Image (cartoon, rainbow, N blue to C red; front, side, top):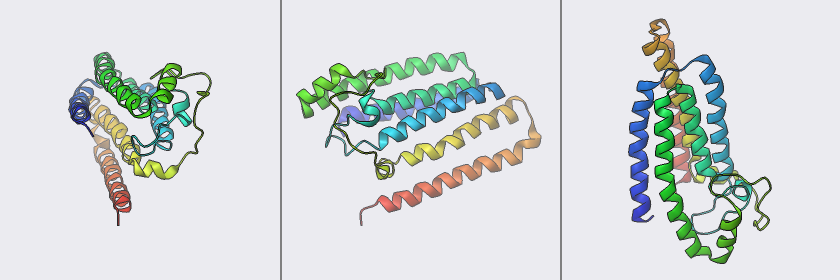
Length: 218
């Protein structure tokens, strides 16, 4: 991983923590916002899971099948949908503006750098792919020059996508907890909700530990 990618990875992590704090502060969710936002979050994670099953080791093979046949950066599209869903749940105009601005700032530079690297690695095949598949707007039909491959569930474990999947219930529960206990001051549900969130975190950590050990080379 190059210095550029390390810097942007650190920047994304920092912005994610800052954004999470701002999100909680401004969040004023409702039953309707959860009803609309949660499916958007799940759609984003579904796109990420789909994409993860087609990504080989980075730089080893150009992924052009599966979701990559419709859009060049399905993982980032999934990230966008997940972030948008969380913002919808929070019902915060401030978070919507910050999310859209932050996403554009972070991923514009990341995509440009990745395009340059992939063109250097794969040459003309990637240039053809670049011309016909948009980085974020899906095609209506699959890329005609795609190399057909099969979805591999094992790649989801390899890329540790289960960590994101397991963290979603904790994040959504946390927003619910904030709304019910802090904003609405319904303290009667405090213990039950807190235990539910703690259980979700515990299960997520256990699964993460199990899968991490399975993926360690023997």
